[in-house]
Length: 509
Image (cartoon, rainbow, N blue to C red; front, side, top):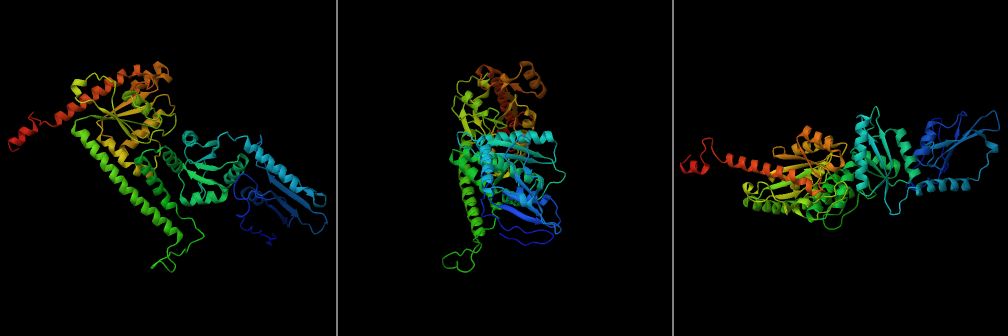
């Protein structure tokens, strides 16, 4: 292509038909003139990076001499100095001689070699994680560690993490132009398939970053939704996840398509008709309505089961807590069940209720019916709003609990943050008034004295869900709490004068 510009610059045409995607260079080189004999400019290097050009070359024009100079630069594969490009020294134009095809093939081979060193035996998508914010670096690093755990739980191989604390956050791309250049080159050097942001992106931000990098871009919410989609096994779980995904997708159906005036057939469908975008949105809304009706039916069945338990006077104990705190392991131990257990975030997605088995409660005679134990979905910081809405029927089941066991991983360095997150979500769900029992799990991973100090500080008890002999204090605490709850319910049915409500009603009061 020959492009004529002016003293301000040239306009590069659309290049989407040339090698879309990250693993390779674009297959194009830019050779242009600098009218005042100046070297490569910052704009030249920006184009080299953003467009993934094979090489950028500037020919200096000097009317007083026959020989001009040539300035050139090219991108670099992964290297110890972490350089992203190489700027060659100026060279006399008449002496410049290079077998370009052979040279560029060698350069691409070096890129490919660097990408292969990160390839695992089993195919996994490779991702770069990015966090951009004004918080302290320590807070961003803590959040990044959790994002890395989420990514690995979803089956993604994390090859690089980037944290930026800019003075001003870009409204269009979240990260600045300089970081975008670094990101594009890093993705090409490492053969990255996916970019994951710790912050939630607006639809326009996601589109802008995706257009610049030519890679898939997702945010924290989308990653969590993907994990939930992998873990859903029951009909209810799959319905809840699909509903959350569609509600997340609906406002993001704003990309232009090549069929903006697609005609619809049939009577009443001739003429301009609906645009492709409108059709997509209508279908998503219809699917959301269908799933919401299905959720209402499933919620009604849950309500019937809860009513039967309530009528039978069966106490309900629910285990709640941050994801990967060991809830399912504890439920399996107390109920002799075989619920799936993995050392991953959100290994449990489907709520399950089981009867205690092989457990002797100290106050069994006073508590009446043996309680049932419910395993629940784990909580996490910044739980997506769409997910909260879709899983509302599941969380509503917690409202019928007589007792909540708040299970905390005592060995986790951010246990206090996890505890605060769970308490905050309980308030959002309107569950803060239900009696709670604070239980620290995984006591075997810490020194015994440290465990005792933490329990005294927060008023909790400690156990190890993999050691049954440590559960004596937990069973005693559950039994005592249920006895107190039953006693309070009984007293609430009595008047201040000690008369039964039935006696008052018989006297017309």
